[in-house]
Length: 183
Image (cartoon, rainbow, N blue to C red; front, side, top):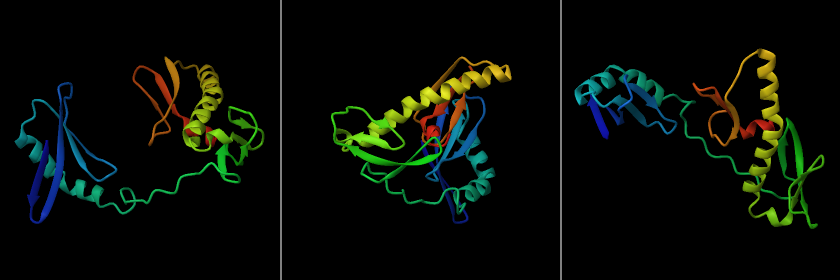
């Protein structure tokens, strides 16, 4: 539900998301500067409005932060063309188009990408990175867990946009496939 709070020329628009399992009210400022109030089903509109009002300066401070929430232009995407550079294991490597009969991406101190993949290359390259991440990251997780004397339920490679990795309360580990570019 969309709400508008207005006082002394300070307009504040926020969305209320109610949940039956929630016990506390939280306020989140999203990357697009939108404000979301997560509230229990039992919280009244008046109580929510009062809490938002009490936090209005914090909200304005967060939404007007010059760096954290500024509108950044998206950098141009990589194109899979001869000579383009991409990261792998902390090093920069060149892409070369493979005009042979190969049907998979190969890495031989450079990336050899079959000409048939050039049009759909980003998805194919992401899948290749994800497979390599499974081969490199997951064994390291196992080794570090043994070394540190800790356990985990499962470890997975995922496609997250804003996090490098997460651990759930049930000890499930998730790692961003983009880590393989930097290791």
